[in-house]
Image (tube, rainbow, N blue to C red; front, side, top):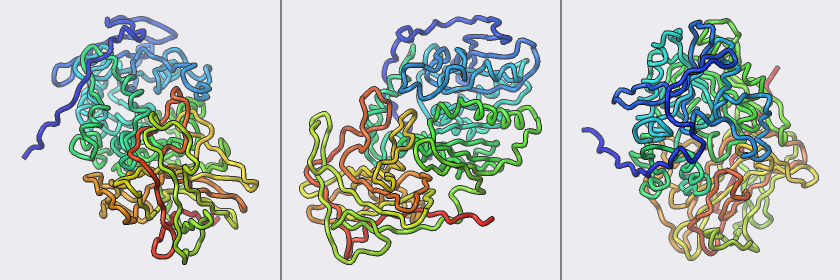
Length: 562
């Protein structure tokens, strides 16, 4: 029996002319040693035409193609001045031909590649109505790969590359298994839109989503209204399932990149996808820095080329000798060292419980004998309650007696209640302080410089666990129903803390912060994940000690033997 069709809510597209769109029309030019064909019509299996720009060598040699798949406009370059400090992307690293979050044709074409910029279905001049991050998009990608491979200028080898959306699409396209897709390079791309984009721990994301919706709504037709679909589908269902690729069908070589800094967007999903794809040849690189700066950094670009030169051009570049995993162990903002590993997560991880004690706001290695409570005010909708609260959070500190590395997932188990309410939104941050008590910052999201070690979220009514998928260190929430709270009845909740890697010196401090709103807040023009509309009211209570085993589970890493 086939599943019932899903009714998608669409919104009318915004006229592309309002965003410097040059208009639709085929044209060919020769620029900087490249032949550039703009607005090439590519038919999909249902007759809809997608429009692409092709950059290829002027010499006429046959070359492999790199597919750049995005909704942001193939005519739109990286926008200097739009992001804080330009996200540290230097102007000399990229040219005017560089599509936002994609590779620079002026680098790749002289080195024997064609770059294909795609306006995906229903965006800008491409025909049809736009749906995002779904199985249908994978089918379009299949058709595009096979079209590219059949062109007279192509060797028949096609790869995919890019950041964020350009990475997410690669999971769907690779799962469709187009025969001529030879390798993928997803650079920070979430893989579960419900858990990693729309609902963090069941809490709706309502800061970044509307901004993103606007950015992908330039269309001559209609586009999927993600914000409306979030309201219609607040629980995980068949709609959200269409936005998760079948990772067991991804078999092509993959160079996967994640960043510890991307708490609340791509980090979790990138690592989940890496673990689940069936590719026998796969490599993982995890840094702790800004995504676009790292993607465009000349050293990174050379690494990308070594990967594609091997799998698309048949050159011996040493890729097969790369460590399966290379990760950065952070000390503070842009201070850390890289280490090679054999797997993710690290097999030698030793998990350790740090027990919360509300009496003194501490974390300890031993279970706490006496029960106590931490109480804080839980602000509601920030648009209605902008004032600061006197008691707006609970804090618990642990001072390390010896140098310690924490790499992997943490889990926060709490016993909680919300007097006078039947639900509660919990926001958690793991922070680092040096031996003098000074806050230690890390890179955050795409361009911030005062971020945390890690973050976690939970709407208490979404606390039901998937017992098959959950592990002691990583709770997996079902999100299939709401389990409301009862007055005066504390309940245990398990909060997934997104992965991180941090080194603590002797005398340095780890702090757990729990409150009822986003712990990191910025001006609205700073684009980041946020949850300004919560269901919180009154007070939150955290129970510790006695029969309440509230604790933080941390992943300690013993030193590798020589």
